[in-house]
Image (cartoon, rainbow, N blue to C red; front, side, top):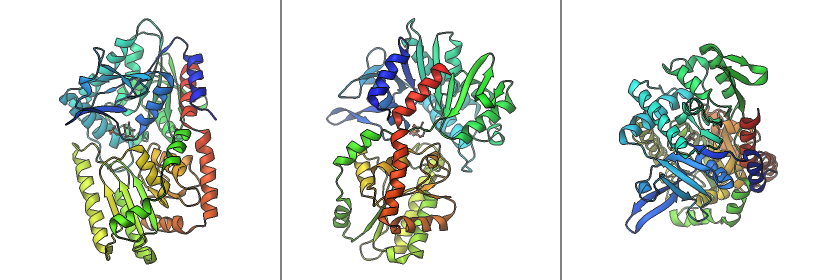
Length: 486
Ligand code: G6P
């Protein structure tokens, strides 16, 4: 198994004198003002959790947008601060955006154009020339932040996700000796969808500045090839997984991200299994079955469909009434975007409706919090839960799914997983569903709660084997190898 130690050695041996940069929009730690002074905290889980681990193991410089209200007070004159707070193994360099840049680059082009365009969820992307011009401007700002740090040494830059699609070309155009690997964490749409974007060609040629582009799923990579083949004059060699554009070759391959196997096992070891007892006491109920879900409040996550499944499950299998609760951790996300605000309201309204329909004595089936909880608490929920519901309508990967399978009790926990999540490929032994099929979802919840301990154990053990092998360090090693050598 590749672990942090091997990864560290791999970096030393292979990057040699190349300095290592990771560039992404979301920062792993933020500083905020509190009544007792400035507080530092980890930003809630996601891709940046993985990148934080990669940076810690490799001493990379992590370049990201400064988003905390006290971020600017703790950085040095290069906008840098040593992170993580205690071990301080790498530098976080913050890029500060103006309100206008944030509105147009993050809330606009990234999350109202590229995000809905890339996810097959029937939310219409919006195309706005001002957003696009800010997207270009902010991508250049990230590139400048990297170039500021480059001395005359060669470099390796890991570009992360859809916020920074133009960065690879901009870096290549700088003429410096830089190896560029890009990971696109969200789905890549089909040609028929992608082509409606007025700036589709610029996004493609921006990305083709990379030496390697990784996607989580094979069909995301295939869609990308199709788009290139049909939209720009490039040489596409499918058998080599390679595209040559203006004499520069880019490898494009699927490479699903893994999780930190060891870290999760360690947190899990300390997690107590008394949660149900505590909830019963706190809520004055007597539940036997606990379901959990952990998602940003985002319309791609299939939350309405999930709550409809719970409704149907309680209706079809009434023996679970008063014995089952669903605990949802679903922090607000991107709240300045109207589609997100409307979605959050529709979801909470539906929960209220279902709770009213079934409420009996002190029991209601759905309990939600819109705050994000610290990692060890989330893992405690996973460990205690009999079932985890992961029901996205479309999703690049979904780390929650992988983390739950490893964190649950192997004879007790079972995952119900949308087959449209990238993670479904590695978690083939979960209870796979089509999230639009409410009846199937309701039956899967029942199945998760009623199959034998032996069957749960068998399924979980098979999935954990994959998670152990294809862990985060294995993923990062392969990503870097492909960027350097292929
Ligand atoms: C997805 C994206 C990430 C992003 C995360 C959280 O997983 O692939 O790049 O960071 O959502 O979204 P946010 O807008 O809060 O960064």
